[in-house]
Length: 307
Image 1: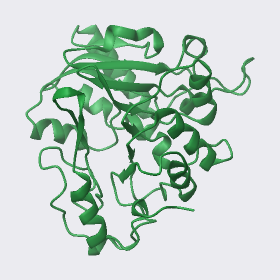
Image 2: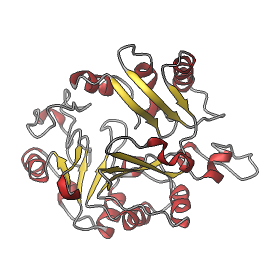
Image 3: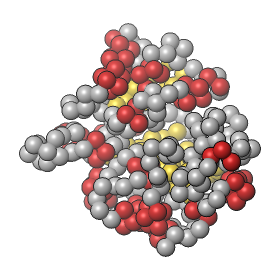
Image 4: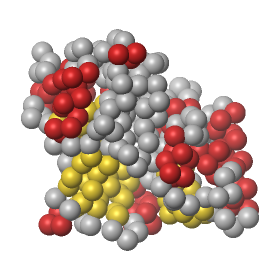
């Protein structure tokens, strides 16, 4: 789900000799979520059975328009089925083998309007509010909630419908940044109360924003004080001098991390597996990651209770 700029996803596929994708899903058409998707769709060595991305009448970046063109070309050539209905109506269409994918948002009311400007009769619907929120199950057991960039109003829309959001792993919305609704600590607390995760992941790039916000971390600790927390890259709140960080042994050897070459990676790529009996396991393990935090970072905030 989602492909950032550059070639980290393509490199990961090549390194793992993966040439076939059943479902490629893009949560919403913001640049940081679709930047590398057109390149992947244009790759002749990768077979993509289904491409999912909700349309946007007001998104006119070159990145998005190029993506639409590449997806349409593959549809014209009968190479890929272009699916523009990544909403709760998708249901079982996304399930395959041991993997189940539930689309929890947007619902049909929001999907029927789509992204809209302030002049719309029902008010503005920004791209973040249209973010597809997915829950992935492995062998019938809920495993990961992917919250994309869902904002506070979009999240409350999910909760108001009584949707079950529980999952052991939460990829926190908006990279741990502000939900734009005012109280970021309350938003983080509300999200974690609904999901009840045992592991909270912040997928972030180190250089543009100073995420995760301290207020967000505080809200996570309020709701799930015993949950493990990890960032894919080193937050600037935790360490300021990347030159002092050497490549770490705990990073996945098979799934490359976008920041590894520059010393940016913290937990790096996190692999979630279903074990027999429904237990969920993670790599890197908590012990491996904790050792890295203690030995390499100045102020690893995920190890301390935030007040």
